[in-house]
Image 1 (cartoon, rainbow, N blue to C red):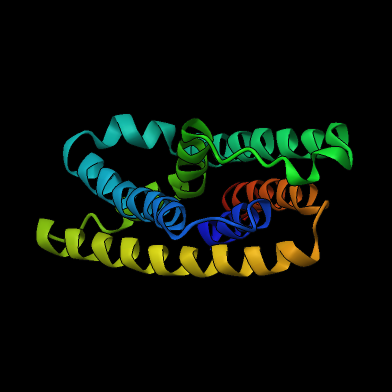
Image 2 (image 1 turned 90 degrees about the vertical axis):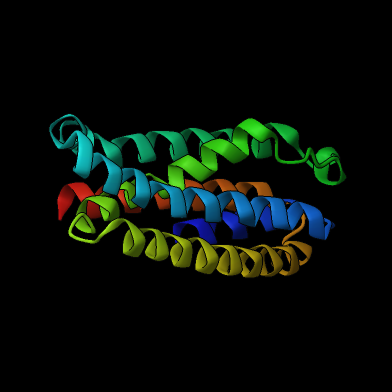
Length: 177
């Protein structure tokens, strides 16, 4: 759902996003969401002590990355003014990778919990996670685009708020619970 929400924010940003770009964004989220559980599974089977030491920091990293991205979007919306409304800059590679990592880093813990699975079952689970994430993110982009036409001028501000809220949700779910 984190990747869906970020896709929604990305869709708000670009009302005229071509299908190829949507597939790239949804694919990035799908790959990261599928890859992280496998990394966690692999870690448990190889170097559990080393990876378990970083587990408490995962929510903090996600919060920091999403707060940075969201804050940048909010500052851009505040500084940009009304003149920049039609001047959209496409989502850059670095930002897309940061979004992919930030929204999937908590999925690393899923790999820790699937450590009882064999390699085949862990891989199948990760492929299913990736496919579902891809489909959900395509839907999020489409919904964001439709909402973006109604929220023109406020999309960057709303997108930034969504990213920060997701970071806080990841952090609160993992640290406070």
